[in-house]
Image 1 (cartoon, rainbow, N blue to C red):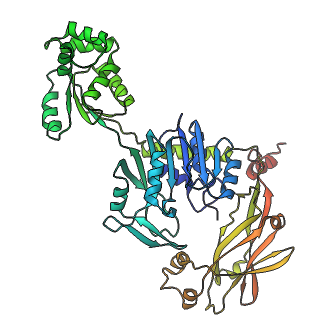
Image 2: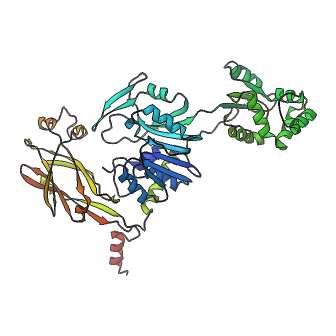
Image 3: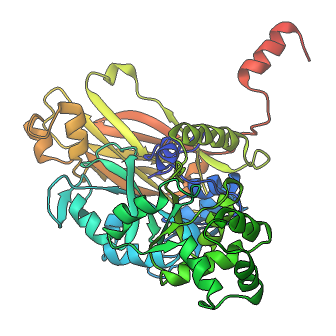
Length: 491
């Protein structure tokens, strides 16, 4: 069944809408890993957005084969998540796949081990609405899986910095709402009170941080102690402080220290006094040098928060995410335009006289689906007959080898919900008989027109024809363009 969507190829997942909902960070110069990458939609986006390394893994060899053809600039491996690739990555995605893991919390922890210190793990998961710290077994249209409650999610992620960003894009038949969660490694915090002398920094630190038992490092006291021979610092730093330090000239001394390039040594000294843990800095820093203090502390592994100004978040705006998703959609429409790929073309052929008696849908294959050296193609969908259907229907295919019959043997409660408004509201026949089908068809048979149809009351009802054709040259004029040329007499 086609999962990811591309221009001209409709899949079960509305991939462009999901891309916008994920709120992915900018990729320029970053390393990206997509776990369960399918046909590589998000890997292609990372490359499009400037990532320096893009790697996708999926245990489906067919999906990986298609991904390699779509995005040769990316790297793809056909493997499970039991053995993650070596190295660390700045962005890792695991999208609507966690519930397939035997040890869901263990997989999250292993992904976090593969994350760089400044990286983000982006999860798309469904959350059970029940309260408590537990896993809830949920029946889906295809199976039963365990999903975490909000309390269980918090328990799994308690050692990390995490946030539920918002809803993701649901798919047909989803029993639970999907959510997007961003997860980062916890860092020690440096709370920076860097206002002018006498601006109230010490009072704030005393009332806010000392009561919370967060160490407060005083810049004034640090200078005094250095001038008294305490702390291990460079001779140049000690000489300058010893020469310039007075309680009345803190601002002048501080400006000279930053002009002379001691910001990194001062940041290391402050963090050393705090034991490289959370701390609040009570020290005047000139406005033009405050960013250099943040940079120096972040280089030491801190997440810096300036109390006197607004700290911009690292989450890109929703509008920007939507715009980038649309830009990528436009890019995909012309991407690999010089390649003539083998594609499946599905043409619906059911006569309209059967519309009151039969409803059906073909989940796979979809028109425009790429082929990548696949010996067989999965055919799946559903069909429901009306007019007091009394006997089971069958699906048939007609090829040069003759007619082949297949049973409707797959329960599809999602279809009964959609067609009849609920399983209990369905006719007795369809509560007792499955309406879904699934089988494989030799790819070689698609070189000719394969007729797909339904046997209803011993009558053959053609539904569609399937055939493999060479991919369309996207650079060729459209039918409308050719028609306009013909009318205008242009050559």
